Image 1 (cartoon, rainbow, N blue to C red):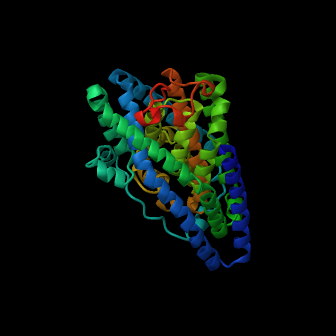
Image 2: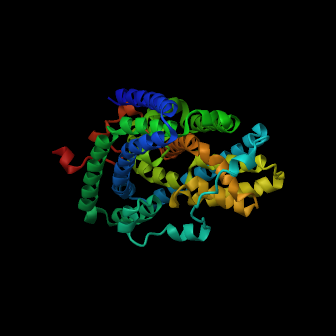
Image 3: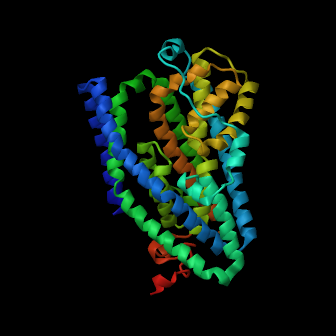
Length: 431
């Protein structure tokens, strides 16, 4: 069934591009925009359904996973290993982005003045490190869930999970009930994902209908260079995975194809979260690891997005003929390393980080207009890359913790407990 759904999603992608291209060629810009508006309804419904299940899914699976750890030292060890991996991956992604944009020089010879004169830079929220740090702690778990603030949900879940683990048998029924709710959310996820092919088709058809494929030719060096750089990043991530988890890296990449395509087509890493969690567990990663590392990764390990920020900022500088010394670029890298950690807390995250960087380094703020025409196409690539980076990070941490199992020896997800232990089966499952 999973293979069949994957094939249907791929077919939906192809049909979406074809239908979008036909609309762009045959309809006027106003008509194409109107049709894209109707198609967007389908995509918006799917994304709203995803947002509907993410908060309770993260909350329940993470609380249960931590409660089953029962060892605060193990939790601290997992957290430390996770953050060390994230920092390393972040630095590599930024360095690769800077190296490739200097090597390819996509902005050289680009007529920045002509393009930027066609519009003003969009209004984006201001990015403040102080605000981000304060934003980590929820004022209310209800408010955090209502706003889908994943990082705040993680903070609350860690406290709740550790408390339940410390109380032991006194709260066994609470853990069991939370686990049952998690099973319900996983089943709801299955139903929601049946709409994925329709959302993929509508998303791609709408983008191509309004922007057309011709815009990629105009920005060919920029788009092509960025996607080539993403391929190198994928290869590097796969190599890191191979070093840590061994020959099963290829199997992991094959397992996450469906979440990657969903993220790519909808330009939303969030849209792929429920399916990705399921796929990682099927790969053999214990739920206690997947449900802890993955939400953190969505806030701290956006490899594709971070490389894009470095790549796009330097593209704008090149397009305006502004030379930046090696020292300035290193300082910019460190600036991006810090500010990018606030991505999950603000809308239009990558544009916000780029806007903040342009201002901080006295680069033309209107340069943001240069990348808007192709931002959607590039967002697709970086969203898919974020999924790959988080998957390999989760598998690596699971391997280090000895919680990466051979699926041939592990019961299916529905037959084992959410802590990844086949002996941990809830009362209702026993019945």
